Amino acid sequence: MDPEVIAFNEEQLSDESIRHDGMRQVWLLAISLSILQIGFGIVTPIFPFYITSLGVGGIELGVLAASFAITRIVLAGPMGGLSDRVGRRPVLLAALFGFAVANLIYAAASSIIVMIAARSLEGAVSAGFFPAANAYVSDVTSVDNRGTAMGYLSTGNMVGFIVGPALGGTLAQFTGYRMPFVIAAVATLVTMGLVHILVKEPMKKTARTDGDTRDRIPIREALSRAKSIYGALGVAMFANMFAMGILEVAFMLDAVVNLGIQPIEIGVFFGVIGIVMIVGNVGFGKLSDVRGRKWLIVGGAMVSAASLLMFILASDVTGFLVAGAFLALGMAMRGPTIQALIGDATDPRSYGVVMGVFGAVSNSAYATSSLLGGTLFDRTASGDIGLLIAYEVSLAGAAVAVLFLPTAVKSEDECNQVPPL
Image (cartoon, rainbow, N blue to C red; front, side):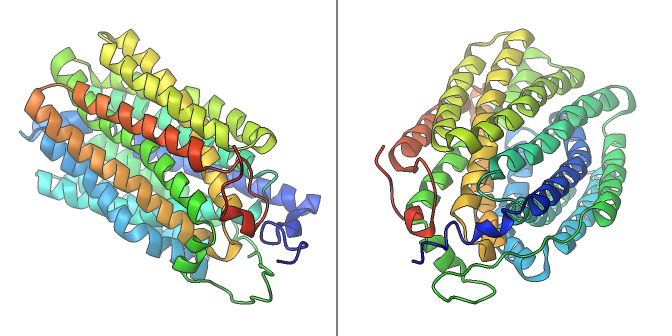
Protein backbone atom coordinates (compact mmCIF):
# COMPACT_ATOMS: atom_id res chain seq x y z
CA MET A 1 0.00 0.00 0.00
CA ASP A 2 1.26 3.46 -0.90
CA PRO A 3 2.52 5.07 2.34
CA GLU A 4 0.88 8.32 1.29
CA VAL A 5 -2.52 6.65 1.45
CA ILE A 6 -2.96 6.54 5.23
CA ALA A 7 -6.34 6.16 7.01
CA PHE A 8 -8.20 6.13 3.65
CA ASN A 9 -6.87 9.48 2.46
CA GLU A 10 -8.17 11.41 5.44
CA GLU A 11 -5.44 13.96 4.90
CA GLN A 12 -8.04 15.63 2.68
CA LEU A 13 -9.54 16.99 5.90
CA SER A 14 -6.29 18.47 7.21
CA ASP A 15 -7.20 21.95 6.04
CA GLU A 16 -8.41 23.82 9.14
CA SER A 17 -11.31 25.58 7.41
CA ILE A 18 -12.73 22.28 6.19
CA ARG A 19 -12.35 20.68 9.60
CA HIS A 20 -13.96 23.62 11.40
CA ASP A 21 -16.90 23.66 8.98
CA GLY A 22 -17.32 19.91 9.52
CA MET A 23 -17.43 20.38 13.30
CA ARG A 24 -20.05 23.12 12.92
CA GLN A 25 -22.20 20.67 10.99
CA VAL A 26 -21.71 18.12 13.78
CA TRP A 27 -22.97 20.68 16.32
CA LEU A 28 -26.04 21.42 14.20
CA LEU A 29 -26.77 17.72 13.84
CA ALA A 30 -26.28 17.24 17.59
CA ILE A 31 -28.80 20.02 18.34
CA SER A 32 -31.32 18.43 15.97
CA LEU A 33 -30.71 15.03 17.52
CA SER A 34 -31.32 16.42 21.01
CA ILE A 35 -34.78 17.60 19.96
CA LEU A 36 -35.54 14.24 18.36
CA GLN A 37 -34.45 12.43 21.52
CA ILE A 38 -36.71 14.63 23.65
CA GLY A 39 -39.56 13.17 21.62
CA PHE A 40 -38.11 9.68 21.90
CA GLY A 41 -37.38 9.98 25.63
CA ILE A 42 -40.80 11.37 26.53
CA VAL A 43 -42.33 7.91 26.13
CA THR A 44 -39.67 5.96 28.10
CA PRO A 45 -41.24 6.30 31.57
CA ILE A 46 -44.72 5.68 30.16
CA PHE A 47 -44.42 2.21 28.64
CA PRO A 48 -44.51 0.16 31.89
CA PHE A 49 -47.67 1.99 33.00
CA TYR A 50 -49.28 1.98 29.55
CA ILE A 51 -48.65 -1.76 29.32
CA THR A 52 -50.22 -2.50 32.69
CA SER A 53 -53.21 -0.30 31.83
CA LEU A 54 -53.82 -2.56 28.82
CA GLY A 55 -53.79 -5.61 31.10
CA VAL A 56 -50.55 -7.21 29.86
CA GLY A 57 -47.21 -7.93 31.52
CA GLY A 58 -43.47 -8.47 31.20
CA ILE A 59 -43.41 -10.68 28.12
CA GLU A 60 -45.55 -8.20 26.19
CA LEU A 61 -43.36 -5.29 27.27
CA GLY A 62 -40.34 -7.31 26.15
CA VAL A 63 -41.96 -7.95 22.75
CA LEU A 64 -42.81 -4.24 22.46
CA ALA A 65 -39.21 -3.24 23.16
CA ALA A 66 -37.80 -6.01 20.97
CA SER A 67 -40.03 -5.16 17.98
CA PHE A 68 -38.23 -1.82 17.73
CA ALA A 69 -34.85 -3.52 17.77
CA ILE A 70 -35.80 -6.33 15.38
CA THR A 71 -36.85 -3.96 12.60
CA ARG A 72 -33.62 -2.03 13.13
CA ILE A 73 -31.65 -5.28 12.87
CA VAL A 74 -33.27 -6.09 9.53
CA LEU A 75 -33.09 -2.59 8.06
CA ALA A 76 -30.01 -0.92 9.60
CA GLY A 77 -27.58 -2.27 6.99
CA PRO A 78 -29.79 -1.55 3.96
CA MET A 79 -30.70 1.92 5.26
CA GLY A 80 -27.06 2.71 5.98
CA GLY A 81 -26.22 1.58 2.45
CA LEU A 82 -29.02 3.77 1.13
CA SER A 83 -27.42 6.79 2.80
CA ASP A 84 -24.17 5.91 0.99
CA ARG A 85 -26.05 5.97 -2.33
CA VAL A 86 -28.57 8.82 -2.08
CA GLY A 87 -26.93 10.92 0.64
CA ARG A 88 -27.21 11.33 4.40
CA ARG A 89 -29.67 14.23 4.45
CA PRO A 90 -32.59 12.61 2.54
CA VAL A 91 -32.43 9.54 4.78
CA LEU A 92 -32.38 11.69 7.92
CA LEU A 93 -35.43 13.66 6.81
CA ALA A 94 -37.45 10.60 5.79
CA ALA A 95 -36.65 8.87 9.08
CA LEU A 96 -37.80 11.85 11.11
CA PHE A 97 -41.14 11.98 9.29
CA GLY A 98 -41.73 8.29 9.91
CA PHE A 99 -40.90 8.71 13.59
CA ALA A 100 -43.56 11.42 13.95
CA VAL A 101 -46.16 9.16 12.33
CA ALA A 102 -45.26 6.32 14.71
CA ASN A 103 -45.89 8.52 17.75
CA LEU A 104 -49.31 9.55 16.48
CA ILE A 105 -50.18 5.85 16.13
CA TYR A 106 -49.10 5.33 19.75
CA ALA A 107 -51.40 8.12 20.88
CA ALA A 108 -54.41 6.40 19.27
CA ALA A 109 -53.50 2.82 20.28
CA SER A 110 -56.04 0.78 22.24
CA SER A 111 -54.33 -2.62 22.07
CA ILE A 112 -50.87 -4.06 22.47
CA ILE A 113 -50.88 -5.17 18.81
CA VAL A 114 -51.24 -1.57 17.60
CA MET A 115 -48.48 -0.45 19.97
CA ILE A 116 -46.16 -3.17 18.68
CA ALA A 117 -46.91 -2.10 15.10
CA ALA A 118 -46.07 1.52 15.98
CA ARG A 119 -42.90 0.45 17.75
CA SER A 120 -41.86 -1.60 14.72
CA LEU A 121 -42.35 1.42 12.46
CA GLU A 122 -40.30 3.49 14.89
CA GLY A 123 -37.50 0.94 14.68
CA ALA A 124 -37.65 0.90 10.89
CA VAL A 125 -37.23 4.65 10.51
CA SER A 126 -34.58 4.92 13.23
CA ALA A 127 -32.64 2.26 11.31
CA GLY A 128 -32.16 5.02 8.77
CA PHE A 129 -31.54 7.94 11.10
CA PHE A 130 -28.81 6.71 13.43
CA PRO A 131 -26.48 5.00 10.91
CA ALA A 132 -26.85 8.03 8.63
CA ALA A 133 -26.07 10.41 11.52
CA ASN A 134 -22.98 8.44 12.59
CA ALA A 135 -21.84 8.14 8.98
CA TYR A 136 -22.36 11.89 8.57
CA VAL A 137 -19.98 12.55 11.46
CA SER A 138 -17.40 10.20 9.94
CA ASP A 139 -17.78 12.04 6.61
CA VAL A 140 -16.94 15.45 8.04
CA THR A 141 -14.21 14.49 10.54
CA SER A 142 -10.76 12.91 10.56
CA VAL A 143 -9.10 10.38 12.83
CA ASP A 144 -7.69 13.30 14.86
CA ASN A 145 -11.06 14.75 15.89
CA ARG A 146 -13.57 11.95 15.31
CA GLY A 147 -13.80 10.92 18.97
CA THR A 148 -14.55 14.51 19.95
CA ALA A 149 -17.22 14.79 17.24
CA MET A 150 -18.85 11.50 18.25
CA GLY A 151 -18.86 12.83 21.80
CA TYR A 152 -20.74 15.94 20.67
CA LEU A 153 -23.27 13.82 18.79
CA SER A 154 -23.75 11.57 21.82
CA THR A 155 -24.14 14.65 24.00
CA GLY A 156 -26.96 15.92 21.79
CA ASN A 157 -28.52 12.50 22.17
CA MET A 158 -28.17 12.68 25.96
CA VAL A 159 -29.65 16.18 26.26
CA GLY A 160 -32.84 14.74 24.84
CA PHE A 161 -32.40 11.69 27.02
CA ILE A 162 -32.48 13.93 30.12
CA VAL A 163 -35.29 16.27 29.11
CA GLY A 164 -37.48 13.64 27.46
CA PRO A 165 -37.99 11.15 30.33
CA ALA A 166 -38.31 13.92 32.91
CA LEU A 167 -40.91 15.68 30.76
CA GLY A 168 -42.65 12.41 29.90
CA GLY A 169 -42.85 11.31 33.53
CA THR A 170 -44.29 14.68 34.56
CA LEU A 171 -46.80 14.76 31.71
CA ALA A 172 -47.91 11.18 32.34
CA GLN A 173 -48.39 12.00 36.02
CA PHE A 174 -50.71 14.92 35.31
CA THR A 175 -52.14 14.51 31.78
CA GLY A 176 -52.36 10.74 31.29
CA TYR A 177 -50.45 8.35 29.05
CA ARG A 178 -51.49 9.50 25.57
CA MET A 179 -50.69 13.23 25.44
CA PRO A 180 -46.89 12.73 25.64
CA PHE A 181 -46.99 10.80 22.35
CA VAL A 182 -48.62 13.75 20.58
CA ILE A 183 -45.95 16.08 21.99
CA ALA A 184 -43.27 13.64 20.82
CA ALA A 185 -44.67 13.77 17.28
CA VAL A 186 -44.61 17.57 17.28
CA ALA A 187 -41.03 17.64 18.60
CA THR A 188 -39.96 15.27 15.83
CA LEU A 189 -41.51 17.47 13.14
CA VAL A 190 -39.65 20.46 14.58
CA THR A 191 -36.45 18.44 14.34
CA MET A 192 -37.22 17.61 10.72
CA GLY A 193 -37.53 21.32 9.96
CA LEU A 194 -34.20 22.09 11.64
CA VAL A 195 -32.39 19.35 9.73
CA HIS A 196 -33.88 20.58 6.45
CA ILE A 197 -32.77 24.17 7.11
CA LEU A 198 -29.47 23.78 8.94
CA VAL A 199 -27.81 20.50 7.95
CA LYS A 200 -26.24 20.32 4.51
CA GLU A 201 -25.18 17.21 2.64
CA PRO A 202 -21.50 16.44 3.43
CA MET A 203 -18.89 16.33 0.72
CA LYS A 204 -18.03 12.72 -0.02
CA LYS A 205 -14.50 11.56 0.63
CA THR A 206 -12.55 9.53 -1.86
CA ALA A 207 -10.24 6.65 -1.13
CA ARG A 208 -7.13 6.24 -3.30
CA THR A 209 -6.41 2.63 -2.33
CA ASP A 210 -4.18 0.97 -4.90
CA GLY A 211 -5.93 2.62 -7.82
CA ASP A 212 -9.39 1.54 -6.63
CA THR A 213 -11.74 4.23 -7.97
CA ARG A 214 -15.10 2.62 -7.23
CA ASP A 215 -17.75 4.88 -5.67
CA ARG A 216 -18.85 2.11 -3.32
CA ILE A 217 -17.52 -1.24 -2.19
CA PRO A 218 -19.54 -4.35 -1.25
CA ILE A 219 -20.27 -4.79 2.43
CA ARG A 220 -18.43 -8.12 2.65
CA GLU A 221 -15.32 -6.56 1.18
CA ALA A 222 -15.60 -3.56 3.51
CA LEU A 223 -15.88 -5.76 6.59
CA SER A 224 -13.11 -8.10 5.47
CA ARG A 225 -10.61 -5.23 5.53
CA ALA A 226 -10.77 -5.00 9.34
CA LYS A 227 -12.10 -8.37 10.48
CA SER A 228 -10.50 -8.62 13.90
CA ILE A 229 -11.24 -5.05 14.95
CA TYR A 230 -14.83 -5.22 13.68
CA GLY A 231 -15.37 -8.51 15.50
CA ALA A 232 -14.09 -7.12 18.81
CA LEU A 233 -16.08 -3.90 18.41
CA GLY A 234 -19.19 -5.93 17.63
CA VAL A 235 -18.85 -7.82 20.92
CA ALA A 236 -18.19 -4.56 22.81
CA MET A 237 -21.24 -2.90 21.29
CA PHE A 238 -23.42 -5.96 21.97
CA ALA A 239 -22.40 -5.94 25.64
CA ASN A 240 -23.08 -2.20 25.92
CA MET A 241 -26.65 -2.42 24.64
CA PHE A 242 -27.48 -5.75 26.33
CA ALA A 243 -27.35 -4.02 29.71
CA MET A 244 -29.68 -1.25 28.54
CA GLY A 245 -32.32 -3.72 27.34
CA ILE A 246 -32.30 -5.55 30.68
CA LEU A 247 -32.50 -2.25 32.51
CA GLU A 248 -35.42 -0.81 30.54
CA VAL A 249 -37.57 -3.96 30.78
CA ALA A 250 -36.74 -6.19 33.78
CA PHE A 251 -35.48 -3.47 36.10
CA MET A 252 -38.19 -0.94 35.21
CA LEU A 253 -40.94 -3.52 35.80
CA ASP A 254 -39.28 -4.55 39.05
CA ALA A 255 -39.17 -0.93 40.21
CA VAL A 256 -42.80 -0.25 39.25
CA VAL A 257 -44.40 -3.50 40.45
CA ASN A 258 -42.34 -4.34 43.53
CA LEU A 259 -41.22 -0.93 44.78
CA GLY A 260 -44.05 1.35 43.67
CA ILE A 261 -41.81 3.74 41.73
CA GLN A 262 -43.82 6.54 40.09
CA PRO A 263 -43.41 7.92 36.52
CA ILE A 264 -41.82 11.14 37.74
CA GLU A 265 -39.20 9.14 39.70
CA ILE A 266 -38.35 7.12 36.58
CA GLY A 267 -37.94 10.41 34.76
CA VAL A 268 -35.47 11.59 37.42
CA PHE A 269 -33.61 8.29 37.15
CA PHE A 270 -33.09 8.68 33.41
CA GLY A 271 -32.28 12.34 33.94
CA VAL A 272 -29.36 11.39 36.22
CA ILE A 273 -28.12 8.92 33.61
CA GLY A 274 -28.36 11.60 30.94
CA ILE A 275 -26.50 14.27 32.93
CA VAL A 276 -23.58 11.93 33.60
CA MET A 277 -23.45 10.92 29.95
CA ILE A 278 -23.54 14.52 28.70
CA VAL A 279 -20.42 15.36 30.69
CA GLY A 280 -18.77 12.02 30.00
CA ASN A 281 -19.43 11.82 26.25
CA VAL A 282 -17.53 15.01 25.41
CA GLY A 283 -14.75 14.43 27.94
CA PHE A 284 -14.12 10.80 27.04
CA GLY A 285 -14.54 11.49 23.32
CA LYS A 286 -11.76 14.08 23.51
CA LEU A 287 -9.66 11.77 25.67
CA SER A 288 -9.95 8.98 23.11
CA ASP A 289 -8.55 11.33 20.43
CA VAL A 290 -5.52 12.03 22.62
CA ARG A 291 -4.90 8.79 24.51
CA GLY A 292 -6.43 6.17 22.22
CA ARG A 293 -9.67 4.21 22.02
CA LYS A 294 -8.95 0.73 23.39
CA TRP A 295 -8.58 1.21 27.12
CA LEU A 296 -11.57 3.53 27.40
CA ILE A 297 -13.69 0.77 25.88
CA VAL A 298 -12.26 -1.79 28.31
CA GLY A 299 -12.66 0.52 31.31
CA GLY A 300 -16.21 1.41 30.32
CA ALA A 301 -17.17 -2.26 30.18
CA MET A 302 -15.77 -2.84 33.67
CA VAL A 303 -17.55 0.17 35.17
CA SER A 304 -20.84 -0.88 33.55
CA ALA A 305 -20.45 -4.41 34.94
CA ALA A 306 -19.95 -3.02 38.44
CA SER A 307 -23.06 -0.83 38.10
CA LEU A 308 -25.23 -3.86 37.32
CA LEU A 309 -24.22 -5.45 40.63
CA MET A 310 -25.12 -2.15 42.28
CA PHE A 311 -28.62 -2.35 40.80
CA ILE A 312 -29.07 -5.81 42.32
CA LEU A 313 -27.98 -4.57 45.76
CA ALA A 314 -29.96 -1.30 45.67
CA SER A 315 -33.14 -1.19 47.75
CA ASP A 316 -34.34 2.39 47.39
CA VAL A 317 -34.46 5.27 44.91
CA THR A 318 -31.12 6.69 46.07
CA GLY A 319 -29.40 3.36 45.43
CA PHE A 320 -30.92 3.16 41.96
CA LEU A 321 -29.76 6.68 41.15
CA VAL A 322 -26.17 5.91 42.22
CA ALA A 323 -26.17 2.68 40.18
CA GLY A 324 -27.60 4.57 37.19
CA ALA A 325 -24.84 7.17 37.44
CA PHE A 326 -22.17 4.46 37.32
CA LEU A 327 -23.88 2.75 34.38
CA ALA A 328 -23.97 6.08 32.53
CA LEU A 329 -20.27 6.64 33.25
CA GLY A 330 -19.39 3.26 31.73
CA MET A 331 -21.56 3.88 28.67
CA ALA A 332 -20.03 7.34 28.17
CA MET A 333 -16.54 5.85 28.28
CA ARG A 334 -17.19 3.31 25.53
CA GLY A 335 -20.17 4.61 23.49
CA PRO A 336 -18.64 7.46 21.44
CA THR A 337 -15.25 5.72 21.59
CA ILE A 338 -16.63 2.61 19.87
CA GLN A 339 -18.28 4.76 17.18
CA ALA A 340 -15.05 6.69 16.62
CA LEU A 341 -13.00 3.51 16.29
CA ILE A 342 -15.48 2.13 13.75
CA GLY A 343 -15.00 5.33 11.73
CA ASP A 344 -11.21 5.07 12.07
CA ALA A 345 -11.21 1.55 10.63
CA THR A 346 -13.70 2.08 7.79
CA ASP A 347 -13.24 3.02 4.15
CA PRO A 348 -15.06 6.36 3.65
CA ARG A 349 -17.06 4.88 0.76
CA SER A 350 -18.76 2.43 3.11
CA TYR A 351 -19.31 4.50 6.27
CA GLY A 352 -23.10 4.29 6.03
CA VAL A 353 -23.42 0.57 5.43
CA VAL A 354 -20.82 -0.34 8.07
CA MET A 355 -22.50 1.91 10.64
CA GLY A 356 -25.74 0.17 9.69
CA VAL A 357 -24.24 -3.26 10.35
CA PHE A 358 -23.10 -2.14 13.79
CA GLY A 359 -26.53 -0.68 14.38
CA ALA A 360 -27.92 -4.15 13.69
CA VAL A 361 -25.48 -5.64 16.22
CA SER A 362 -26.52 -3.08 18.83
CA ASN A 363 -30.19 -3.76 18.29
CA SER A 364 -29.68 -7.53 18.33
CA ALA A 365 -28.39 -7.05 21.88
CA TYR A 366 -31.33 -4.85 22.82
CA ALA A 367 -33.90 -7.25 21.32
CA THR A 368 -32.33 -10.27 23.01
CA SER A 369 -32.05 -8.65 26.43
CA SER A 370 -35.53 -7.08 26.27
CA LEU A 371 -37.20 -10.42 25.54
CA LEU A 372 -35.02 -12.23 28.06
CA GLY A 373 -35.60 -9.60 30.74
CA GLY A 374 -39.37 -9.60 30.28
CA THR A 375 -39.56 -13.41 30.32
CA LEU A 376 -37.39 -13.72 33.43
CA PHE A 377 -39.43 -11.10 35.25
CA ASP A 378 -42.70 -12.90 34.53
CA ARG A 379 -41.21 -16.16 35.79
CA THR A 380 -39.39 -14.85 38.87
CA ALA A 381 -41.17 -11.54 39.67
CA SER A 382 -37.69 -9.98 39.95
CA GLY A 383 -35.15 -8.26 37.71
CA ASP A 384 -32.12 -9.64 39.54
CA ILE A 385 -31.41 -12.65 37.31
CA GLY A 386 -31.53 -10.49 34.19
CA LEU A 387 -29.15 -7.96 35.77
CA LEU A 388 -26.74 -10.75 36.73
CA ILE A 389 -26.71 -12.06 33.16
CA ALA A 390 -26.05 -8.52 31.90
CA TYR A 391 -23.14 -8.27 34.36
CA GLU A 392 -21.58 -11.42 32.90
CA VAL A 393 -22.08 -10.17 29.33
CA SER A 394 -20.34 -6.89 30.21
CA LEU A 395 -17.36 -8.76 31.63
CA ALA A 396 -17.17 -10.85 28.44
CA GLY A 397 -17.16 -7.63 26.39
CA ALA A 398 -14.27 -6.29 28.46
CA ALA A 399 -12.26 -9.51 28.00
CA VAL A 400 -12.70 -9.52 24.21
CA ALA A 401 -11.69 -5.85 24.01
CA VAL A 402 -8.50 -6.53 26.00
CA LEU A 403 -7.52 -9.43 23.76
CA PHE A 404 -8.46 -8.20 20.29
CA LEU A 405 -8.80 -4.43 20.05
CA PRO A 406 -5.76 -2.60 18.65
CA THR A 407 -4.32 0.32 20.54
CA ALA A 408 -4.43 2.45 17.36
CA VAL A 409 -5.64 2.37 13.75
CA LYS A 410 -3.30 4.10 11.32
CA SER A 411 -3.91 2.42 7.99
CA GLU A 412 -6.10 -0.08 6.26
CA ASP A 413 -3.49 -2.81 6.58
CA GLU A 414 -3.23 -2.34 10.33
CA CYS A 415 -7.00 -2.75 10.71
CA ASN A 416 -6.57 -6.47 9.96
CA GLN A 417 -3.93 -6.97 12.64
CA VAL A 418 -3.93 -7.07 16.42
CA PRO A 419 -0.96 -5.03 17.63
CA PRO A 420 1.02 -6.19 20.66
CA LEU A 421 -0.77 -5.40 23.90
